[in-house]
Amino acid sequence: GIQVEQSPPDLILQEGANSTLRCNFSDSVNNLQWFHQNPWGQLINLFYIPSGTKQNGRLSATTVATERYSLLYISSSQTTDSGVYFCAVKLYSGGGADGLTFGKGTHLIIQP
Amino acid sequence: EAGVAQSPRYKIIEKRQSVAFWCNPISGHATLYWYQQILGQGPKLLIQFQNNGVVDDSQLPKDRFSAERLKGVDSTLKIQPAKLEDSAVYLCASSSDREGTQYFGPGTRLLVL
Image (cartoon, rainbow over all chains, first blue to last red; front, top):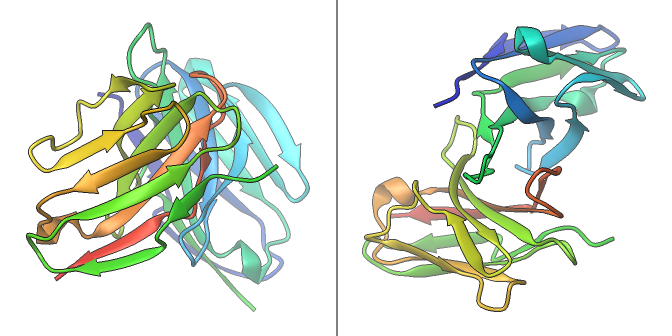
């Protein structure tokens, strides 16, 4: 099956710092989503980005589908950004399942 | 717009007991998913419904897990009998179509003792 690798696995930053999280995937996809899982376990949608670049406030994401990677940028980090960031992908379905395959996540801690 | 609703939020049971989880997707969403998230890992798909039909249940342990979506709206996931390794968060997600963004509910935290 498709492999999804996220890096770094852990990241500790001071408030106000910028960060880049990376997601590599092993096959062509037609769905790629970035999620933030908060300390209460809720998975919050950040971006639906199978290709291209999107921005939402302090967050932006870029997916280069031909090179099979996606990047999530967080600028001016705040303590509320702490949590686990997941990249999840879905292969072209062709009539098959549409479930997302998740990476192991990047655990981000923002210190005040 | 209301999000995906799940209940209960927490459940503690003894091994070999049975348990059921409920999910109500976002209104109008035809596709519904159940995922299992074990501590320290990313969620893993258990079953996918399109309206009231099963699209994929290849990763559902069918000897103990069952799921239904009888009227194509809300869904239940059941475990009978539960094992210690079933301790996890059970997440329900929905999407408007098979290609679209998946939205997740708050999850049910299950602890099997």
